[in-house]
Image 1 (cartoon, helix red, strand yellow):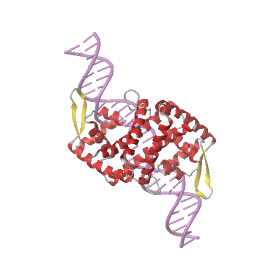
Image 2: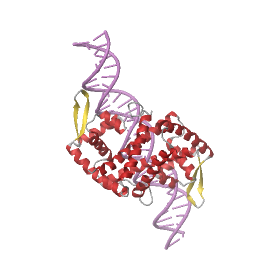
Image 3: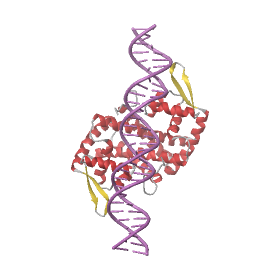
Image 4: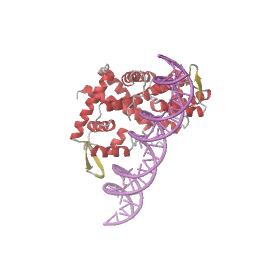
Length: 159
Length: 159
DNA sequence: ACCGTAAACTTGTAACGTACAAGCAATTGG
DNA sequence: CCAATTGCTTGTACGTTACAAGTTTACGGT
């Protein structure tokens, strides 16, 4: 009941709002500039940042079940946006990377996205953004450590 | 392609992670200490913070469709956790508030929740938490202003 | 006072994202 | 060389949410 508790609940509240807003934001940006699906964009962006990766790595990074990634990969491959090759040392796995076309599409997505970003957060200077980002990253790291436990990030929640 | 762009995408990435982690976190906390459903807890907490409110207000604050709130209210009322009375000046609306039992239940929820919080973020001092919270609040405010447009917060996304 | 329109909410329904479970191919260890 | 394990795919169900239609109440003009 102390005020310290309220700080924590307040953070929780803002996180919730943030998640909700983010969803609306992304969907709105998407339908204003219909192109790459947001989830696909994020996945491609992840691939562009970290380079070639296996599906299971992607699942851990994106914090979703492997099955979700698997299907996304299927779609992106059908659209020709990613390249896939068997993992050299393990025939069960494959290595995913953004294709030429994928990079191009990602760039278009990014431009549209940043325009939308500018509209909402044009008043923020870069330092402010970087600051919030790094604090969020810290938070995420701690949560990940506590929640995700050692390895598998998908906390089996026993639906 | 400038580094400023990457800052923005990085923020987006962290927001996404944050949303995902938050979901896992809440669900995990819930099943470790099964009690009030997370959504119900947040709604009650909102009621406790802002006091009596109409369903439509709640929908705006929580950034979800009115229908969602309507059903949540139905459930909470069935559980006796909220009080509901017709709005004095408008027979179509009603006023919702946390009941005695609701406050008690909320308190239990909060305690369990904060314990979980402590486990993950015990190392954070209060100032750090407050700081992140206020920055997030700023972000949310700007997003809300851009996205939510004038009134209704549910951005019709034309599913 | 009455009727049409609009507003607040409820209920019905569909879509989307996700997790869980079962299955399959490839690898590893004894 | 076979059993157990790992990495992924596919099947399926659930939860959350939005959208649409329906119901009741309020409001405004004539």
